[in-house]
Image (cartoon, rainbow, N blue to C red; front, side, top):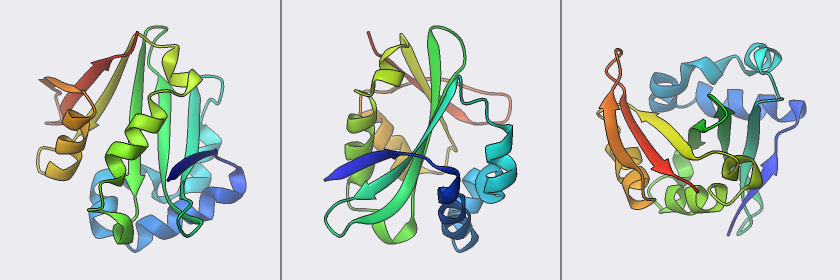
Length: 147
């Protein structure tokens, strides 16, 4: 079972370590690579970050990031470290996250995904997200109504 544990500044090194050894992760989420710098820029009054823990072996396997874009729309990013990909955990993570009180305050959740990240596209679609548009950088944007 997956648990989402509130991020603590001490967790920064986990995120950095995951990404340093993950070429694909760095391609999609390079912003997170210098986690300490990134964390210092976060406005935690409108942004939430969780570490994803797999209680099968009590290992931290990724992170889930949520930010309010407006009072009605939130944006999510999630990352699973390479050794835990391809196991269907993305859908479990999204289903767990979508019932969090922080996300339930929005009417709509958005997620961006690179057009060649087929695993994330399939996961978003299985979780009830629908393609909405392609942004100016070529990122495919998906959304899902919450309330």
